[in-house]
Length: 149
Image (tube, rainbow, N blue to C red; front, side, top):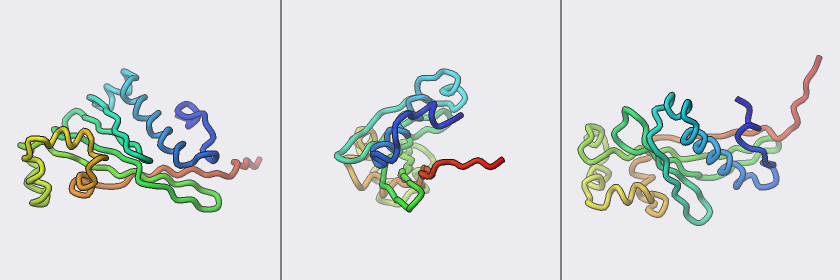
């Protein structure tokens, strides 16, 4: 599928906003297009916003916990724009994966307010550091594509 089907804006006019908007468009498509939703095992999506950053939590079939994705920044090179997103996995309190977490993270999963903290993880900085599992990057070439025949 081509990028223009997800995002019609100009990435270079506001790269930080555009990269977040592009990710939002992809996630919303996964949420609301039945064929995509079913193929991914998508169960739900919730937006979480703080000043300057956007994030989402999602549930996916065959995973007990909740995934978190949040915008963490931009890098610009002369011909490229790279947006990065932090990926987290928040296991439920009785999930086997809790045993593989740090003691501090495992203790956090036992708090009575744990799930509300997860759903608003961007407002609680320690949540991403305790449950971060990776980074997702989006790279966009800003030079026009040149075709040779």
